[in-house]
Every structure is written in structure tokens, then in C-alpha cells.
Length: 173
Ligand code: NI
Image 1: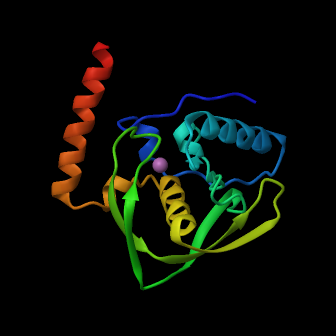
Image 2 (image 1 turned 30 degrees about the vertical axis):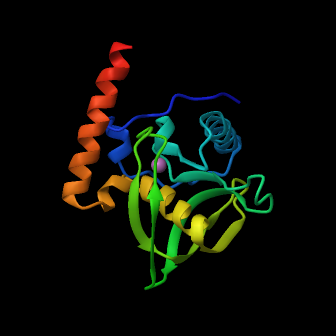
């Protein structure tokens, strides 16, 4: 296992649709282990394979915390949103690939997601609240979509301006 470098906004791979996984083998499980280690190191609640430079349809999530130790820990291979509610929900969202940037994103409040775990067993999740949001965010990554794409043009421009400024300051320091 290894902590991998997280790809940042501006790198092409974040915009490429991930390729479907065909082999549920040790290579896949080793990728998943690296993704989990990277996610924990970065203190995120979810990570998609393109974010560590691997263009495959794999994501990991872990929503457990002190307040909610029962909240799920998931590995999803080739996940698909099979149903989403008409009812929407607004909440602030961020992304490990766009560090320190956050904005309110509107998404369906409930989704049903189906996919496979790292062993190739079918997984189906009916989710609401934070899990529904996190699943949609990670599955978006597998299609080359980022949370900033859900913002209005005005808000996206403002966020990108702030992001570019923070990157320049980072490069200096
Ligand atoms: Ni993200």
C-alpha cells in the first residue's frame, strides 16, 4: 500500500471518463488499498481513481466519524446511479483535487447506486443525505465531471479565480 499523489484541477486526467474495470484481480485490490490509504492521509470522505492518475471506474468512500461510527465504508467498481429523486438538496461541497475550495451544490436528495466491490460481488446502495451527495460526487469523477461544473457560471468563475490565486501563492511559499 502507498499514499499516492492526488491529481489537481487543471490536470487532464480529471476530465477523462474512466474506463470500465474488467478484471477483479489483485491489481484492482492493490489500487483500492492505495486509494483508501491516500483518502485517509488526505482526510477526505471519498476518492475516485482518476484523482490518483488512474483512469478506471473505481471509487472509495468512508463516511464514518465519531458522531456516526456506523456510517458506511464503501468500495465501488463500475458504479452507476440507477435512480435519483426529483427532490433536491443543497449543501456545501469540496474536493481533494481542488483543495480549500468549497461551494454549495444542488443535487438529487436520494439516489440508488449499483456496482461491484473489489471481489466482483454486486453492491446496491440506497442513499440519502451525505452519502447520496458523496456517491454522486465520486461517480461524477468517473465521468470527468467536477463539483464546480454544477455551479452557475458566475460562481464557477469566482471559485476558479480564487483557486488560481491560491495556487500562485502556494508556488511562492
Ligand atoms: Ni472530488
